Length: 115
Length: 112
Image 1 (cartoon, rainbow over the protein chains, first blue to last red):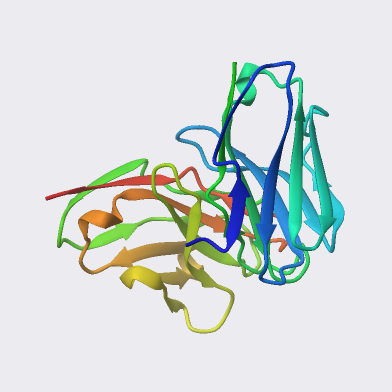
Image 2 (cartoon, each protein chain N blue to C red):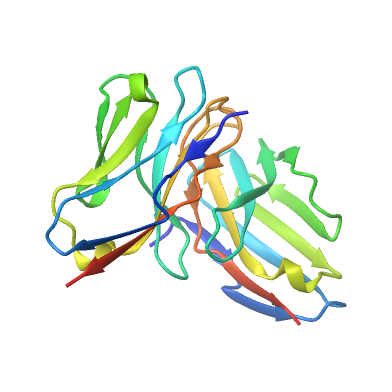
């Protein structure tokens, strides 16, 4: 069982919908990450939160909005997505802040489909 | 910029045979190196990591990897592959200790 929990596992939404992806970890990790993964490709980094502050935004379109309410939770708010945004969205966490070099632990992801 | 290369896109081995997956990194200083495995529909699971010290690293599921600075390599090995090892394998590094850079992945197929 993964120690990083992502909900929902699957999400289908229209281009005008607003939805949120959720990620939770209780390992005391201080860095949390969002990745996007297309089929047969490696994960692409989207955002990094370190000590609950946004530290990296990889030039992600504003239709993706991250939020870190506390050290255990990470959300990704979605609005007006495009069909090309269909992908597996992975959350990860690591001990210590971003830059510590500690391994990242991944959740099982949310499979997102945009109609 | 740092990069990670996995030369083999797809490898097929027979169950019980040995396995070696290749990984080369470009970062000049000693990198932090990782191997992850991803089964279909799943997230990434950490197999092993190298930070410093002993260049032969033992991981979970019977995997090991050897760091060779002279070859800029961090190849993953397993002496006897099981059918359940069929998955996508990613090598990754955080040479600057800030962002995880993944290789393009190697898909392992195991024949019975």
